[in-house]
Amino acid sequence: MKKILISLLFAFVAVGASAQFSQGTKYIGASFTNLGLSYSKNNEFRFGINLEGGYYVADCWMVRAYGGYEHAKHVDDVYLGAGLRYHFYQNGIFLGAGLEYDHITKSSNDLLIPVEVGYTFYLNHYLAIEPSVYYKMSTNDFADGSTVGLRIGLGYFF
Image 1 (cartoon, rainbow, N blue to C red):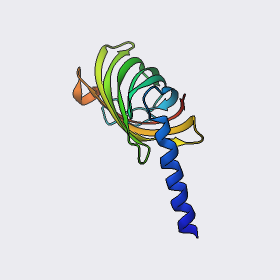
Image 2: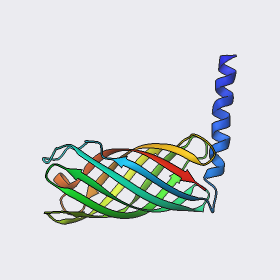
Image 3: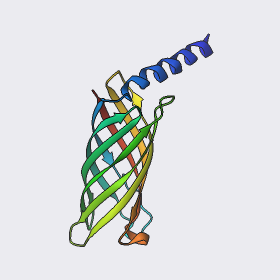
Image 4: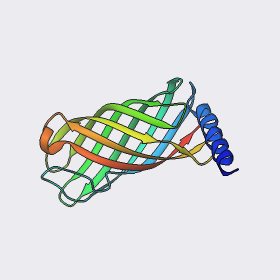
């Protein structure tokens, strides 16, 4: 009986998730970013907030724009970006990529190429929790400007 209930729950989540990924759906979200992950020589605790909006131009394909702020002990970053995100109908996993302009206060500016993988866990038909892992490759300073991060967000689909 337990296996049947779990199978029905997964089937319900998969069927319910497909409606949110259809063409014409709009999206807004907010998330906490970076959460202290880094591998560069400037390895210090970082914390940020990210706001984003998107529109599904085709089933499963979302065009999105975002901006955010990250704070660290010695440097603050303000960034703007745009990109694509692909959601898989079957399970809520998404892949994203784009281009990001990063203004690093007291230092320099950078152009980043972010890629991410994450999961969309629906709380109801409109609201979702979206954890993801991302990598931002720096075009200015590959070794010290690239970062790996963790993001946990809340998304609203309408």
